[in-house]
Length: 156
Image (tube, rainbow, N blue to C red; front, top):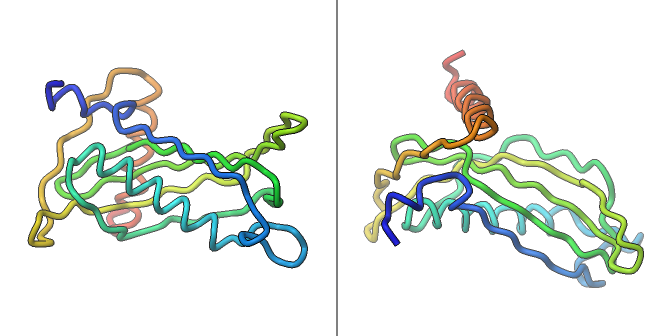
């Protein structure tokens, strides 16, 4: 595969799914928010590594609001895709859903934006490929990501 063909947002897409077990939950049967944050960070890093073809480190996590509880027995699915690429940093959007595998009922539980920096083998920041935008939806997401990045950097 030509490296340049891997620079679209969809080429960075990663999905992970995990059945929530008792060890993931508190005594009310709800999954710990920290466990979901760990999964969000992992899937976000994977999407950015797929884009950059380098190791990455987390440098920012925007607000994460837990809209609905996730319960023991739910199948949690996390979808991540790079929405912005700077010189060495990338923003990724992570969507979290919970599904009752018996009833098939889906619940959107979280959306988060995280920023990662790509590192070379000496742990020095390394340039990442720019995103190749091919759809109006990708353009809209990237424009929103640029605004978030300016806000993070205090440039608004």
